[in-house]
Image (cartoon, rainbow, N blue to C red; front, side):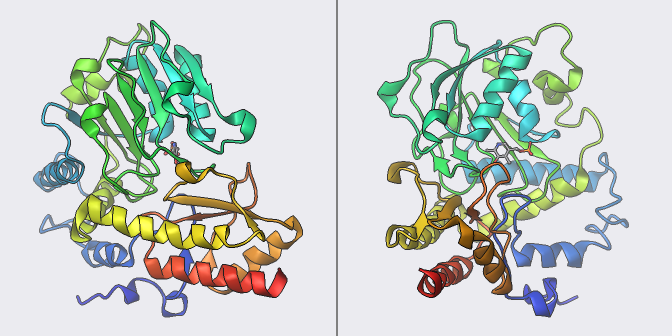
Length: 369
Ligand SMILES: *Cc1c(COP(=O)(O)O)cnc(C)c1O
């Protein structure tokens, strides 16, 4: 069946762009591939929606997914890759349970704050730097914090999806194992996996649809979890079962596999990075050229994936969102905790979508500024 990218969406909606933070947009060509392949999965005689997780076809899909991810992210061969459930949120608990309990946290936004609080719930967590007092507008410099003696790891959230604050280089913590939540920036630019003991990312931003979470870990960093830890929260159980300690989300795994192929076809992570930087600069240029729009994030900490902004006159925000939606620019409302607007411009967002939004913003300012 011939299927073009355009035909994946109804014709009337062909020019809409989805700026939601997650579940985020998928590339139309990936949706078209999924649709074309849906009735029967690769000669298995069944749909991917029915495919057994012990089938040879699914085994092949698992191998391919892992090797594509290893290649895209240059994952060291002695590191393990797991595909788990429970989202990034469950990793907030699994990290402390499996890394010896006592974690130090760089709190640069709402997600790292959640990770820290979950560590306090299941073990011990300490915020060694906390940006909440100034409203999460930057990442700390290296000399503003220290890892306390006795800390078993340092946790940071590479990109804060709500605050729009991003680390553009990894914090240095010497011999202390480094743990990263990469959920909203994985595959958006190169990272040094080997500098981390544990990396995790749930799927619904750059990796496809919710239901599957990528965990990359150095097995040498693992500690025995405390007594009472459920089996599914012990990484070693999933390592031994090769990510199949129970029925996996087969369809989400498949979509992840398609997203990895798509990312490779775009030229891989370095090409994505160049593309993403250009996209982000289009929006920050509009914000910088105007005092009609406000983004308080320090320039050096600006996210390439999530650009939150407000209007100087909050009364106009409802009209902004309404006019934007009418122009095909959907889901620009900010997080329910912070209000305002947020443009999520993950890998799948084409430059044309960002350029259309930038032009809309300039035009809205001309009409209302
Ligand atoms: C979306 C997000 C999460 C939460 O992911 P779930 O899959 O809903 O658990 C955690 N961290 C970051 C940085 C996120 O963007």
